[in-house]
Length: 295
Image 1: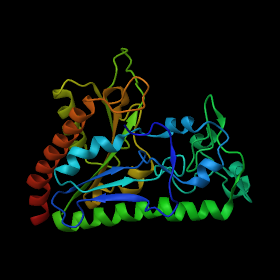
Image 2: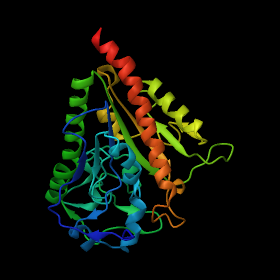
Image 3: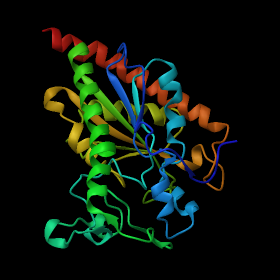
Image 4: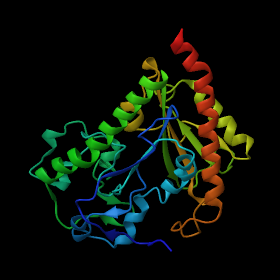
């Protein structure tokens, strides 16, 4: 049985897992940025709330949803450390100066709505829990954390996408997340949300094919609402260079228990569904994009 609560780990642990990168056999890279469960001791030592509150920041066990694709040979990068430590889907400019010693608002003049809500690159507070940290983080510690864990992840994603594009003439980043249950205007539960920044990060045909794939298996799918994707897509999706990126949000009730803590048996079927989506998209890219690259 997996641990339900965060556990301390060595701060020297690598900041991501890599799979199937020695030999790239597919033009798709799977990224899982918010499922990290290795909590550095300095994070837990500074907690102002019960550790269980941090689970609300996780895309709980979303890495399990990538397992079938990884087993089939798709390259993947999975964050080890949690979103509470650093949010890989925020830009390094999205820092809340009130949580950093030695910073003030003049250093971050354009504070986003998400930062004001407590969910910047370093989460500050959660609704119903209040401020997460007893003491402010030291400025140099924050800079080091961003360089070591945030920037390093993105540098590796770029490196892998460039390698894939060099090998195949095209590349697609599937950025895998999970979401609380959300409903459409007709009160229908949405199983999957596919975001592509409203067409800016990905050729629409890949999003449309993915949506059809999940609908054919009985799931309600929406695109770009209520989640259109964030910093990861903005940074890495470059359709003009034939590097595409879309975000896939999965309803947590499809694969977690009622407490949203542990995977259920259905997690395997969802993972297989995502794997078959990757295969379908790869076949499309092999067929069309490689032909275009050869012309």
